[in-house]
Image (tube, rainbow, N blue to C red; front, top):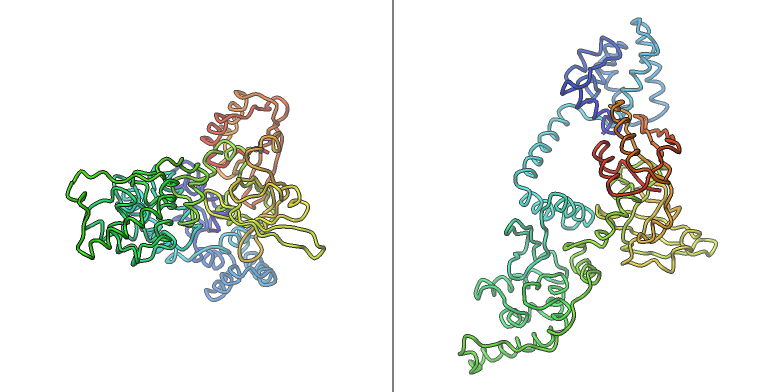
Length: 509
């Protein structure tokens, strides 16, 4: 985590492939850092550097490692003084010794020992191999293992979409209890549906194995044990999408459930009594069609809402998908990236308010805590009274919003303190004006800046452009490119800039 946060990972990769020269602050560091191309990666390296440059014993070097891990200012100051004094005795330049100590402190604070890193690297390599060559099986196992963690499942489902893997809702004619794979699809298991227990699932699977796939809702109700697969279970099956193969739309099936169960109970009663309808002797018997078949299906919004209600997350789509352009322009963070952000970082995030908890402040003003769900999970957003007053009347659990605010990472879970909120569909009216392009300074070369300038020149317009440079110390420097390089927003410029600088490198304010 230390080298990753510093941005040195890009330098490390370039050095490993011979695209960037390996640099060492002092010649004595070469033997210690040669295997990691001049980058401090392991705790053992920190200990060896302390021993070689400052004369620390192995015991003292281990105490230094512990102090760096604890990050206590008073301990670190004492260790710093001891390190500089030891380096001075070995005739090492104090400025260079101080710089080396700063690097050690940054990396070792979140560093691992080599054996620990090796073990995790091996597991990472194995899972990367499985994800590459057996993606369906990999994600099926992953989602099954984390089924109780909604945020992780949401992230995995969207990873599947990114990899063009089709994830479909549970299906009574195909699904088992857990995930199954069919025709390059990942099919949710029936066990994922709320109100559908193990005994209900066993009854459905046994009926299917005995008579084959179900042809209709009535066929399902006639062949399962209705003491186990009751009305509540059937409603959950329909709402989740598990009955989509049964010839009717979801809205029609919900209306038809009482009739289908009644017909199923009657047929099962007759069989128990040894009776049968004379129509059953004709194989081509045409099933009775109820008035429910004329009912119009739910809207996409209703369909997704019921999926979320019965499974806990969206599967066949997501309410944010229709706002792809708005997300690209106005959102520069996701719930996943905010979990790693430092306090005070300004972010713009879009999502669905899946939970709205109104509260009253000590002064008697109304505020709210909102759980905002996006394509990567969920994050808590604090709406103080002055912000809540502007959005209260239009805040709902099925209308995406855009939040601009600051990260607060103190406490157990990071959250966003909202400074500005609007409906996502109205974002252009509220956030039009400035374009921010973000660069990481490690590995930044002149050719990259020239490429960005050429892209801006192709899309001239009225929106001011700012370049943000993120340095290894997590500080950001910002500058305007001036009047001559103002641009007109469009999808093409996003794609072109992200090809050069990577995803999430451009945002619209």
